Image 1 (cartoon, rainbow, N blue to C red):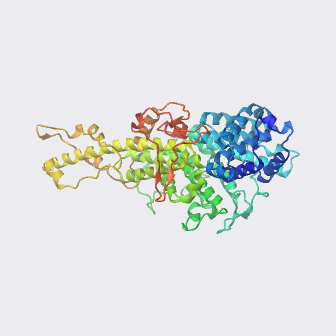
Image 2: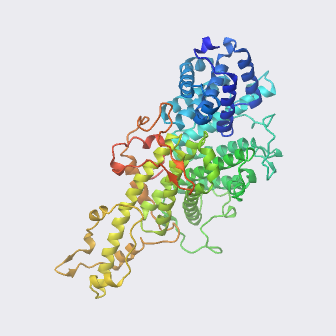
Image 3: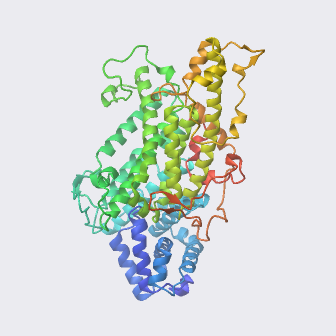
Length: 631
C-alpha cells in the first residue's frame, strides 16, 4: 500500500483516532457512506496493508477521510496522545496524495470517485478555494451520471447494503450540488425530475436517541421510527428537495409577472413552513436548548449540532426564497380598500386556491410581498441570535459545519445591511445594526478554522462603516429640516436647537463623516431669509425617522447601494497568505471568553470598502444575490 500511495500510513492507533475525529466532525453533517460498511473496509485495509489495484480508489477515499480527520484533530490532543507524530506533515502529504490521484479517480468513475469528489469539493469551498471546489464537484456529477447513480432502477445485482451505500452517496451529492448552486449563483447540476432514488434507511448506523426526548416521529419518507442522529439526514434531504425550485424557477427562469412569481414563492413558503413544523424536538434548536443549565453530553451533542445546522439552513433557504420579492414596489399592488377581518399582513393558506388561482388578485400579491419582507427579516434576525447557544457554537467551530454557518450568517448579515441602508434612521435600522454586530462577533468566533467566516466579518465591518456614513448624512439632513420647520413657524433656528433634546449620535460611524454631510441645499439661507421648504418635503423627511413594519420601505435604496458595492470587487480571489496557514486554516483564531465576548478578533479595514484587500467578497458565497437589484 505504501509503495502505491507513496505515503506510509500512521499506526492503526493514530488512524483510529483520525477516523473517530472525522465521524465526530464531518459524518454527522455530511453522511457520505454507510458507516458499518466503511469501517469493515477500513479494518481490512489496516490489517493487511494490501489491496488489489482494482480497489485503489477505495484506498484513496479512506486516505481522504483520514486526512480530513487529521485536519479537524486538535493539535494539543494529538501532541499529548502521540508525542512523536508529525501532524502538520501528515495533513499536507495526505491531502497532496489524494489530489495527485484525481486523474485515476475520475477515470474509474465509480462510487468512490463520487465520494472523493464530494468530500474534497466541500473542503475546498469551505476553506478558500471556491473555483477548484466547483470544478471538482462538476467532475463528481459527471462520474455519477456515468454510473447512472440517479436511477435506482438500473442498479441490478447489488445487495441491499450496496444500494444503501449508493443512496447515501447520491443524496450527499444532491445536497452539496444544491448548496453549491446557492453559493455560486449557478443552475443545479442534477435536475430533480430525473432523480429516482429512495431515501436512505437506518441499517445498523445508530440506535442512539436523545437522552431527554426519545421521540418517535413520522419521517419525511412516511416511515414511523425513533428519532436518532440518522433522522437528520432524512429531514435535510427533504429541505433541499423543497428548496430545489428556488434556484431554477425563481432566479434563472423568471416568471413573466410579479403575480406568478409571488404565487411560486407562496407555494414554496407553505411547504417550508409545514416542513419546519413537522420537525421533532430533537431537531429544533429552541426545544433542545430550552434548559440552558443542562450540560452537553456525548449523546446529546450530535443532536444539538444537527439542529443548529438545520436551523440556519432553513433560514438561509427562506432568505433565498424571498429575496426576489424584496425589490418589488408594494404600492403597485396596494388594495383600494382594507381587507375584511384581520389586519395582519400575513397571508394564510386559505386565502389562495392553488388549483384555481393561476393569477393572484392585487390584495393577495400585496400580502405575499409584505409577508416576504417579514420572513426575510425574521430569518436574518433569528440567525443573528445564534450566539445564545454558546455550547453548541463551541462544538460547531471545530466541525465541517463551521464555514457552512459562516456563509449563511454572511447572507443574513447582508439582508440586515439592506434594511439599514434603505432607511438608516428607522427603528428597524437600529435593530439591524445590532444584529449585524452579533453576526460579526459570531463570524469572528467561527473563523478559527474557516477562512470564509473571517472574510464575512471583514466585509460586514466595512458595510457597517458605510451604514454609519449614511446615517450621519441622514441625521444632519434631518437637523437642517428641523431648522427650516422652525423658521417657517417664526422661531429662530438657534432657539429651536437650544430648546430641543439633542439627537443621539449614530451607533456606528466616524466623526469625519460629518463634514461630508454638512451641506443640505434644501435648507440653505441667504441674507437670513429662509428658502421655502414645502410641507411635502417635511413629511417625507420625517418619515425617515421611524416606521412600523416594512410596508412603506423602498428596499431598492439598500439593494442599489449593495449592487454598487459589489461592482467594486473583482471576480476571483485566492487565500490571503498573511492570514492563512499552509493547510488553509486561519492564523488569527478568535477565542470565546468567559464573559461570552470574543477576544483576539480580526477583520475589517480602516480604509473601509475602498481598502486594498477587496477580493475577499467573491469567495464568501451568495454574494451574487446582490449583483442585481431586480432578481
